[in-house]
Amino acid sequence: MPTIHREPDFGYDDLVDLVEGQLRVVELPALNAEIGGPGERLWMIEPGLGLTDVFRLWRKGRGDRAYWVVDRDHPWDALVWLREALSGVLDRLTRPGSSYVYALEPGREERDLAVLAELEAVRLSGVEGLRQSLGLRAALKVLDREVVIPAQAELARAGALRSRLLHEHYGARPDVAEWAAAELGWDADKARKVLAARGDYRTWVREGAAHARTTLQVHRPPGDTGLPAQLAATLMTAACRDEDIVPGRASPVPIPDGLAPPGTCTSGASEPASPSRWRTSTPPTAARGSTWPWRR
Image 1 (cartoon, rainbow, N blue to C red):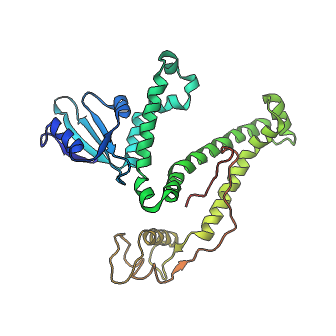
Image 2 (cartoon, one colour):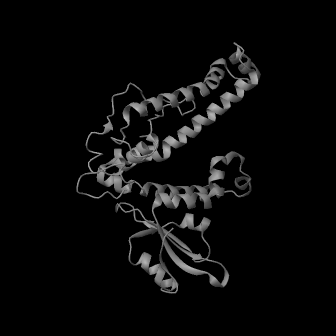
Image 3 (spheres, rainbow, N blue to C red):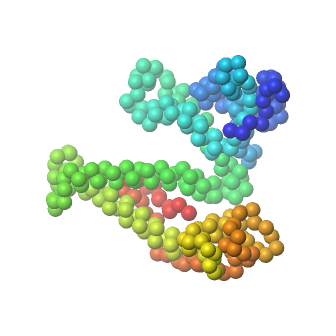
Protein backbone atom coordinates (compact mmCIF):
# COMPACT_ATOMS: atom_id res chain seq x y z
CA MET A 1 0.00 0.00 0.00
CA PRO A 2 1.37 3.45 -0.86
CA THR A 3 2.05 5.57 2.23
CA ILE A 4 0.46 9.03 2.10
CA HIS A 5 1.11 10.31 5.66
CA ARG A 6 3.52 9.21 8.40
CA GLU A 7 5.35 10.07 11.58
CA PRO A 8 7.22 12.25 12.40
CA ASP A 9 5.45 14.62 9.99
CA PHE A 10 2.17 13.98 11.83
CA GLY A 11 1.34 12.59 15.24
CA TYR A 12 -1.14 9.77 15.78
CA ASP A 13 -4.14 12.04 16.41
CA ASP A 14 -3.24 14.13 13.37
CA LEU A 15 -3.11 11.01 11.22
CA VAL A 16 -6.59 10.00 12.38
CA ASP A 17 -7.87 13.51 11.61
CA LEU A 18 -6.33 13.50 8.14
CA VAL A 19 -8.58 10.55 7.33
CA GLU A 20 -11.73 11.02 9.42
CA GLY A 21 -11.68 14.82 9.46
CA GLN A 22 -10.75 15.43 5.84
CA LEU A 23 -12.42 12.53 4.00
CA ARG A 24 -15.87 10.94 3.92
CA VAL A 25 -15.03 7.47 5.16
CA VAL A 26 -16.62 4.62 7.06
CA GLU A 27 -14.64 2.44 9.43
CA LEU A 28 -14.26 -1.30 8.98
CA PRO A 29 -14.27 -2.49 12.61
CA ALA A 30 -14.78 -6.22 12.00
CA LEU A 31 -11.88 -6.40 9.55
CA ASN A 32 -9.68 -4.29 11.77
CA ALA A 33 -10.46 -6.37 14.85
CA GLU A 34 -9.28 -9.43 12.96
CA ILE A 35 -6.04 -8.08 11.45
CA GLY A 36 -5.21 -4.86 13.31
CA GLY A 37 -3.05 -4.27 16.33
CA PRO A 38 -3.59 -1.80 19.22
CA GLY A 39 -4.48 1.63 17.88
CA GLU A 40 -4.64 0.54 14.27
CA ARG A 41 -7.62 1.62 12.13
CA LEU A 42 -9.09 0.66 8.76
CA TRP A 43 -11.47 2.72 6.62
CA MET A 44 -12.99 2.82 3.15
CA ILE A 45 -14.57 5.71 1.26
CA GLU A 46 -18.24 6.10 2.11
CA PRO A 47 -20.37 4.04 -0.31
CA GLY A 48 -22.31 5.98 -2.91
CA LEU A 49 -19.67 8.62 -3.59
CA GLY A 50 -18.20 6.84 -6.63
CA LEU A 51 -14.73 6.84 -5.03
CA THR A 52 -12.80 3.70 -4.21
CA ASP A 53 -9.95 4.13 -1.74
CA VAL A 54 -9.12 2.04 1.32
CA PHE A 55 -7.10 3.67 4.12
CA ARG A 56 -5.13 1.91 6.83
CA LEU A 57 -3.56 3.52 9.89
CA TRP A 58 -1.03 1.07 11.24
CA ARG A 59 2.28 0.65 12.96
CA LYS A 60 5.01 0.07 10.39
CA GLY A 61 8.43 -1.34 11.20
CA ARG A 62 9.61 -3.15 14.31
CA GLY A 63 10.78 -2.28 17.79
CA ASP A 64 12.20 1.17 18.36
CA ARG A 65 12.11 1.89 14.64
CA ALA A 66 8.33 1.43 14.33
CA TYR A 67 6.26 4.44 13.35
CA TRP A 68 2.64 5.28 12.50
CA VAL A 69 1.64 5.62 8.85
CA VAL A 70 -1.51 6.07 6.80
CA ASP A 71 -1.53 3.96 3.65
CA ARG A 72 -3.99 4.30 0.78
CA ASP A 73 -4.86 1.56 -1.71
CA HIS A 74 -7.39 0.75 -4.43
CA PRO A 75 -9.97 -1.72 -3.06
CA TRP A 76 -9.05 -4.60 -5.35
CA ASP A 77 -5.35 -4.11 -4.65
CA ALA A 78 -6.16 -4.04 -0.94
CA LEU A 79 -8.00 -7.36 -1.33
CA VAL A 80 -4.67 -9.07 -2.04
CA TRP A 81 -3.22 -8.37 1.40
CA LEU A 82 -6.59 -8.49 3.14
CA ARG A 83 -7.29 -12.02 1.89
CA GLU A 84 -3.81 -13.12 2.96
CA ALA A 85 -4.28 -11.63 6.42
CA LEU A 86 -7.75 -13.18 6.67
CA SER A 87 -6.73 -16.67 5.56
CA GLY A 88 -7.93 -18.22 8.82
CA VAL A 89 -11.36 -16.61 8.55
CA LEU A 90 -11.75 -17.60 4.90
CA ASP A 91 -10.68 -21.18 5.64
CA ARG A 92 -13.36 -21.46 8.32
CA LEU A 93 -15.99 -20.02 6.00
CA THR A 94 -14.94 -22.51 3.31
CA ARG A 95 -15.44 -25.55 5.57
CA PRO A 96 -17.65 -24.41 8.46
CA GLY A 97 -18.92 -27.91 9.22
CA SER A 98 -15.44 -29.20 10.03
CA SER A 99 -14.09 -26.16 11.89
CA TYR A 100 -12.86 -26.88 15.42
CA VAL A 101 -12.83 -23.12 16.04
CA TYR A 102 -16.60 -23.03 15.53
CA ALA A 103 -17.01 -26.11 17.71
CA LEU A 104 -15.01 -24.47 20.51
CA GLU A 105 -16.30 -20.88 20.19
CA PRO A 106 -20.09 -20.53 19.83
CA GLY A 107 -20.87 -17.33 17.98
CA ARG A 108 -17.52 -17.13 16.21
CA GLU A 109 -19.26 -17.73 12.88
CA GLU A 110 -21.17 -14.45 13.33
CA ARG A 111 -17.89 -12.57 13.78
CA ASP A 112 -16.52 -14.21 10.65
CA LEU A 113 -19.66 -13.36 8.70
CA ALA A 114 -19.30 -9.72 9.80
CA VAL A 115 -15.71 -9.77 8.50
CA LEU A 116 -16.96 -11.23 5.23
CA ALA A 117 -19.64 -8.52 4.92
CA GLU A 118 -16.98 -5.80 5.21
CA LEU A 119 -14.70 -7.63 2.77
CA GLU A 120 -17.61 -7.74 0.30
CA ALA A 121 -18.15 -4.00 0.80
CA VAL A 122 -14.50 -3.34 -0.07
CA ARG A 123 -14.74 -5.51 -3.17
CA LEU A 124 -17.98 -3.90 -4.36
CA SER A 125 -16.56 -0.41 -3.85
CA GLY A 126 -14.12 -1.31 -6.61
CA VAL A 127 -16.98 -1.23 -9.14
CA GLU A 128 -19.06 1.52 -7.51
CA GLY A 129 -17.75 4.27 -9.78
CA LEU A 130 -18.43 2.13 -12.82
CA ARG A 131 -21.97 1.38 -11.64
CA GLN A 132 -22.71 5.06 -11.11
CA SER A 133 -21.27 6.19 -14.44
CA LEU A 134 -22.25 3.32 -16.77
CA GLY A 135 -24.95 1.45 -14.85
CA LEU A 136 -25.45 -1.86 -13.09
CA ARG A 137 -24.87 -3.99 -16.19
CA ALA A 138 -21.32 -2.63 -16.61
CA ALA A 139 -20.50 -3.25 -12.93
CA LEU A 140 -21.85 -6.80 -13.12
CA LYS A 141 -19.78 -7.48 -16.23
CA VAL A 142 -16.58 -6.50 -14.42
CA LEU A 143 -17.57 -8.49 -11.34
CA ASP A 144 -18.26 -11.55 -13.51
CA ARG A 145 -14.94 -11.18 -15.31
CA GLU A 146 -12.80 -10.61 -12.23
CA VAL A 147 -14.57 -12.74 -9.60
CA VAL A 148 -17.29 -15.09 -10.82
CA ILE A 149 -15.67 -16.54 -13.95
CA PRO A 150 -12.31 -17.33 -12.27
CA ALA A 151 -14.18 -19.10 -9.46
CA GLN A 152 -16.26 -21.09 -11.96
CA ALA A 153 -13.14 -21.97 -13.92
CA GLU A 154 -11.42 -23.27 -10.79
CA LEU A 155 -14.50 -25.36 -10.00
CA ALA A 156 -14.50 -26.77 -13.53
CA ARG A 157 -10.80 -27.68 -13.28
CA ALA A 158 -11.51 -29.43 -9.99
CA GLY A 159 -14.25 -31.45 -11.69
CA ALA A 160 -11.88 -32.33 -14.53
CA LEU A 161 -9.29 -33.50 -12.00
CA ARG A 162 -11.83 -35.75 -10.27
CA SER A 163 -12.85 -37.10 -13.66
CA ARG A 164 -9.24 -37.97 -14.50
CA LEU A 165 -8.85 -39.80 -11.19
CA LEU A 166 -11.82 -42.02 -12.02
CA HIS A 167 -10.59 -42.71 -15.54
CA GLU A 168 -7.14 -43.67 -14.28
CA HIS A 169 -8.63 -45.91 -11.62
CA TYR A 170 -11.16 -47.77 -13.79
CA GLY A 171 -9.34 -47.68 -17.12
CA ALA A 172 -10.93 -47.58 -20.56
CA ARG A 173 -13.53 -50.31 -20.05
CA PRO A 174 -16.86 -49.68 -21.86
CA ASP A 175 -18.97 -50.07 -18.73
CA VAL A 176 -16.86 -47.74 -16.60
CA ALA A 177 -19.86 -45.63 -15.51
CA GLU A 178 -21.72 -48.67 -14.20
CA TRP A 179 -18.62 -49.91 -12.33
CA ALA A 180 -18.02 -46.49 -10.78
CA ALA A 181 -21.68 -46.14 -9.80
CA ALA A 182 -21.77 -49.56 -8.17
CA GLU A 183 -18.53 -49.12 -6.26
CA LEU A 184 -19.10 -45.53 -5.13
CA GLY A 185 -22.81 -45.77 -4.42
CA TRP A 186 -23.76 -43.27 -7.11
CA ASP A 187 -26.51 -43.47 -9.67
CA ALA A 188 -25.35 -44.09 -13.22
CA ASP A 189 -26.22 -40.59 -14.45
CA LYS A 190 -24.00 -38.99 -11.82
CA ALA A 191 -21.15 -41.34 -12.66
CA ARG A 192 -21.43 -40.55 -16.37
CA LYS A 193 -21.49 -36.81 -15.68
CA VAL A 194 -18.41 -36.98 -13.44
CA LEU A 195 -16.54 -39.13 -15.94
CA ALA A 196 -17.37 -36.72 -18.77
CA ALA A 197 -16.22 -33.59 -16.90
CA ARG A 198 -12.59 -33.71 -18.06
CA GLY A 199 -13.46 -34.11 -21.72
CA ASP A 200 -16.18 -31.48 -21.52
CA TYR A 201 -13.82 -28.97 -19.94
CA ARG A 202 -11.08 -29.55 -22.50
CA THR A 203 -13.62 -29.18 -25.33
CA TRP A 204 -14.83 -25.91 -23.81
CA VAL A 205 -11.26 -24.57 -23.65
CA ARG A 206 -10.58 -25.48 -27.28
CA GLU A 207 -13.83 -23.88 -28.43
CA GLY A 208 -12.97 -20.76 -26.45
CA ALA A 209 -9.51 -20.57 -28.04
CA ALA A 210 -11.06 -20.88 -31.50
CA HIS A 211 -13.53 -18.14 -30.55
CA ALA A 212 -10.64 -15.85 -29.52
CA ARG A 213 -8.85 -16.41 -32.81
CA THR A 214 -11.94 -15.42 -34.82
CA THR A 215 -13.17 -12.47 -32.73
CA LEU A 216 -10.21 -10.70 -31.06
CA GLN A 217 -8.46 -8.09 -33.15
CA VAL A 218 -4.77 -8.80 -33.65
CA HIS A 219 -2.39 -6.14 -35.00
CA ARG A 220 0.64 -7.15 -37.07
CA PRO A 221 3.35 -4.79 -38.35
CA PRO A 222 3.05 -4.05 -42.06
CA GLY A 223 6.71 -4.84 -42.68
CA ASP A 224 9.80 -6.45 -41.21
CA THR A 225 10.73 -5.15 -37.74
CA GLY A 226 13.79 -7.24 -37.04
CA LEU A 227 11.85 -9.05 -34.30
CA PRO A 228 10.31 -12.54 -34.42
CA ALA A 229 6.88 -12.24 -36.03
CA GLN A 230 5.03 -13.56 -32.96
CA LEU A 231 6.80 -11.15 -30.61
CA ALA A 232 6.26 -8.19 -32.92
CA ALA A 233 2.54 -8.96 -33.22
CA THR A 234 2.24 -9.42 -29.45
CA LEU A 235 3.89 -6.08 -28.68
CA MET A 236 1.91 -4.22 -31.29
CA THR A 237 -1.41 -5.75 -30.25
CA ALA A 238 -0.76 -4.88 -26.60
CA ALA A 239 0.06 -1.28 -27.52
CA CYS A 240 -2.94 -0.84 -29.80
CA ARG A 241 -5.33 -2.23 -27.17
CA ASP A 242 -4.43 0.53 -24.71
CA GLU A 243 -4.62 3.49 -27.07
CA ASP A 244 -5.08 4.15 -30.76
CA ILE A 245 -1.79 5.37 -32.21
CA VAL A 246 -2.54 8.35 -34.43
CA PRO A 247 -0.25 10.70 -36.37
CA GLY A 248 0.95 13.68 -34.41
CA ARG A 249 0.16 12.30 -30.96
CA ALA A 250 2.59 10.48 -28.75
CA SER A 251 1.44 7.21 -27.20
CA PRO A 252 1.99 6.51 -23.48
CA VAL A 253 2.68 2.89 -24.42
CA PRO A 254 6.38 2.38 -25.22
CA ILE A 255 6.70 0.68 -28.59
CA PRO A 256 10.03 -0.47 -30.05
CA ASP A 257 11.34 1.75 -32.82
CA GLY A 258 10.04 0.68 -36.19
CA LEU A 259 7.42 -1.66 -34.75
CA ALA A 260 4.36 0.58 -35.01
CA PRO A 261 4.92 3.89 -36.82
CA PRO A 262 2.25 6.59 -36.41
CA GLY A 263 -1.11 5.59 -37.78
CA THR A 264 -0.47 1.83 -37.67
CA CYS A 265 -3.23 0.97 -35.22
CA THR A 266 -5.78 2.99 -37.17
CA SER A 267 -4.59 2.32 -40.69
CA GLY A 268 -6.29 -1.02 -41.14
CA ALA A 269 -3.11 -3.05 -40.63
CA SER A 270 -4.95 -5.39 -38.32
CA GLU A 271 -6.84 -8.63 -38.61
CA PRO A 272 -10.54 -7.70 -38.30
CA ALA A 273 -12.74 -9.56 -35.90
CA SER A 274 -15.20 -11.88 -37.59
CA PRO A 275 -18.48 -13.37 -36.37
CA SER A 276 -18.23 -16.68 -34.59
CA ARG A 277 -20.74 -19.42 -33.90
CA TRP A 278 -18.99 -20.29 -30.65
CA ARG A 279 -21.43 -19.93 -27.80
CA THR A 280 -20.92 -19.68 -24.07
CA SER A 281 -21.51 -22.88 -22.14
CA THR A 282 -21.74 -24.09 -18.58
CA PRO A 283 -19.08 -26.58 -17.48
CA PRO A 284 -20.49 -29.69 -15.82
CA THR A 285 -19.21 -28.69 -12.38
CA ALA A 286 -20.74 -25.20 -12.37
CA ALA A 287 -23.81 -24.61 -10.24
CA ARG A 288 -27.08 -25.39 -11.96
CA GLY A 289 -28.63 -22.28 -13.41
CA SER A 290 -25.38 -20.30 -13.50
CA THR A 291 -23.97 -18.86 -16.71
CA TRP A 292 -20.46 -19.18 -18.04
CA PRO A 293 -19.64 -16.21 -20.28
CA TRP A 294 -16.24 -16.26 -21.96
CA ARG A 295 -13.82 -13.79 -20.40
CA ARG A 296 -13.30 -10.91 -22.79
